[in-house]
Image (cartoon, rainbow, N blue to C red; front, top):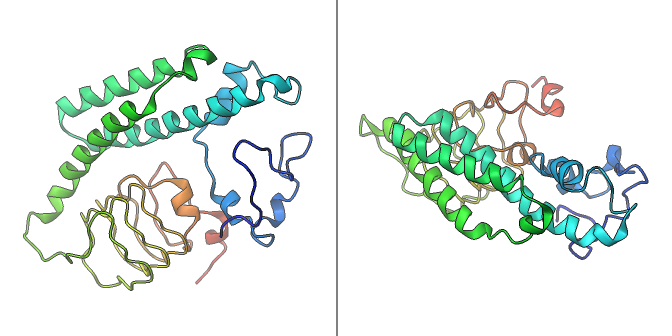
Length: 250
């Protein structure tokens, strides 16, 4: 369990203080709220509160709470899609894919600028499907270059694979498609993950000490912060090594 307490969706946490800060922030892991330490809204919270609701909180206007929380769920999905599309745009070298990505970004950006009532009517399933297909296409393009020499690849390294607790040190990983795989507690110490598709991968408690993820695909902050690493773990430029890892001199 990543949360010590359960609560209904859309209900404010009882540890939220009057300034909308966490009253137990410094003790979250010790109190059993590890999930809070890795959460990332990709900027959706600020966009909803400042743009859609003009900086007026649901505490000041309680009647807006349900609409604000519903809008946040939709905004978070779209902001996350933009995060992935930004990386896909950077990694592809296919002009047609670049155009497709640009069109999707423009479409999502326009939806982020409509009034709140229109936001609440947005159907994100179609957007998800379109973004997913582009991400898969870019992934295939990037990963293909890692198999030019025809080297052996472990057949277990596949989308959706359950590799929880496995020791993958010494395995050839570059270019593997691990989309949606379960890598809870997996040992990746010292591994090179260049070109590895990590979209939706569960990396909780994964060992990433001395691993190189600088050119991994679709790695996010929540994934990174749910794992274990050290100051020598390499991460993509868009992310930063957790401060707790920097203090680890091992």
